[in-house]
Length: 113
Image 1 (cartoon, rainbow, N blue to C red):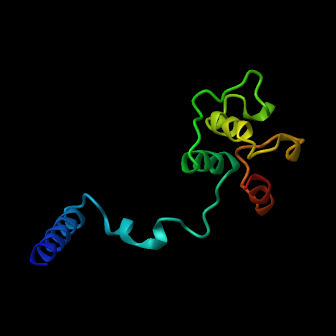
Image 2 (image 1 turned 180 degrees about the vertical axis):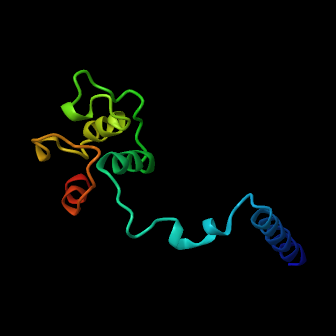
Image 3 (image 1 turned 90 degrees about the vertical axis):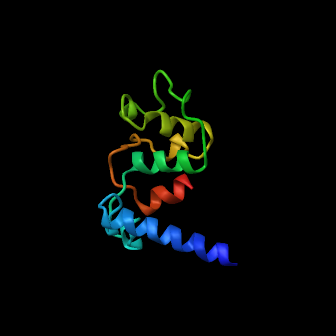
């Protein structure tokens, strides 16, 4: 039990040194700053987060031509294609294109998840 208390004390000291040394700012310690409630997330960003969190392999997901014409060359193209390949995104739900830079809507979340 003595060693556990010692370890906690050492970890607290290291955290204080990181915070006061400016290496890790106290801003990062506030839970409100991890995910902001009013932050807008795009369809492409959501696709990238979903691929990372599931996880899916997006390295070979690129298609020629792409499933949606408006994702060609987009930074999240591989992520979107990986979600299509996994059956998470149905191209029929987006007849006018995916529009990866548009803010994601609740309807999109229902369609994707």
